[in-house]
Image (cartoon, rainbow, N blue to C red; front, side):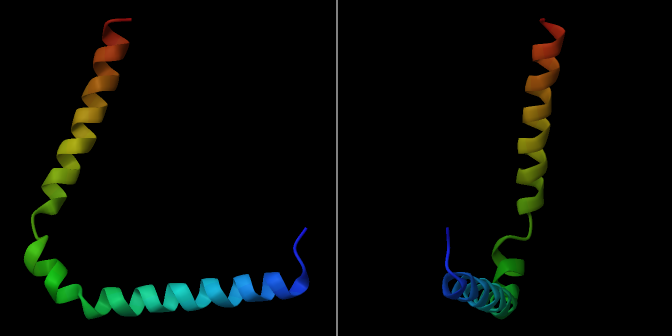
Amino acid sequence: MFSTGQWIFAGFFLITFIIVMIFMYRKDLNLHRKYYKNSIFVLIGFIAFILLLFVIKLYLK
């Protein structure tokens, strides 16, 4: 389905993409800490809401 050259290109592209993403995330880490310091509470709220929907669905079944 794919040639050997395509697999090699995909491998190099994936490795390079991951390295660049890690580098850019580390570069912006101070900004993430400054602007998104309480975002964990929003994530917990969404997870709690989804769990609540499942509990209501099971209870009303």
